[in-house]
Image 1: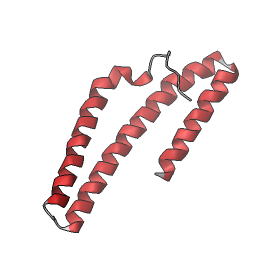
Image 2: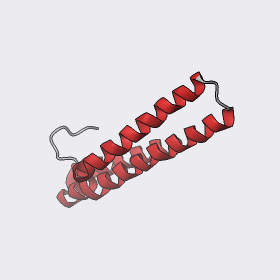
Image 3: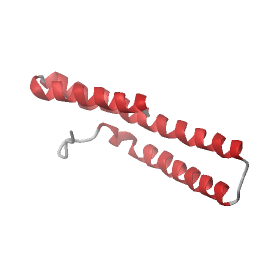
Length: 99
């Protein structure tokens, strides 16, 4: 479910998220170079782990923002919107746990 009209809870930290994502993008490019340069497998795996943890950190931050902003606001309003936001958050958590 997407809500294109609501203000996003992460906007107060948007610049921080963008900075972190750009750093992750650089790490991913570094991984490509490591493979191109035929670096040692374990060194590549170590960097894959670092990128994975960095992405998980972004995901958890966004999830926290979603819960504290979008879900809380919907819960205050009540009704079907509250139920939908809780289900949406639950589905997002399930996707994160499976990844």
